[in-house]
Length: 364
Image (cartoon, rainbow, N blue to C red; front, side, top):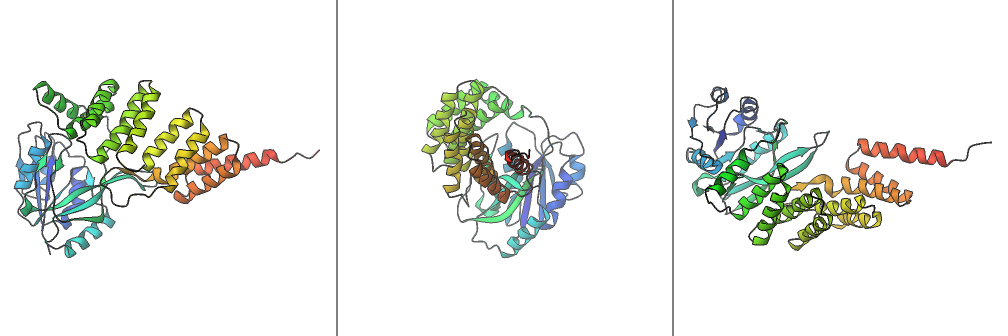
């Protein structure tokens, strides 16, 4: 059976670190913690699980810290996590089964990163990430912020989820400041850096600046296809938020240049027309989702509800506005098949029942 080193970089993670390490400790053979300047009890908590705790002087570069952690590993494979990640019990069992079966022919194992959930804890937002890599390949991290591992070779996809369980908190400006210090120092951002800088600007409501950066990223022609598609959607949001709906719609359609339509983008276009009260056009885009082939293995962002539940609900609303109540009820029932017990579905059911009751002639 292969052996695994867990490599983590941390800073002031006393509220979440023990939860993370408790979920993974029995799955790995070595735990390496690299602390980048904690002032709380992070290192003491880490000490409950490992004596391999190293200090790293923070230099505004996440990749440098991760590469330092990887260099400390000695086992066959390296697993990386953030302190606010956990491996759920069901995924722990899958992970252990994979560990027993994995051969050295595998260079990289991609795993689901589950970052969005509904009220029933059902995964609504996920994407694949390179989680387990063969140490002897000496893969390196790059990019100072929103770092990414350069990898290749024999890649497999495992049905194992890493759950992002970060407590709700306000958006901080740490990453934005790193990007702006780089630019102030005359550094040129990579295509990936430009894309994520644009996203940081949008998150901080600097929409005009974000428009410039998203446009620069897309016009460079150097972006990864999945980033290109999301950038078109984000750019459309920025245009809508700055009162330019025509540019917003153009940006949505630009996303089709890079690949076949995605459920997320079709719903965004459908919502645009619904808000313009052009319900027939809106229905076209929502219904189109049900004719698309849903990706099964994609490294891009995947929001499950946009591939069934949301377009069904939206079709219900639009057909109701068009006076086509039978079709509206059909799509509400379809939405229920995706998410039984949904509050929105139940509310629609009561609405249609009241409509039927009000249509019954009252006795004289």
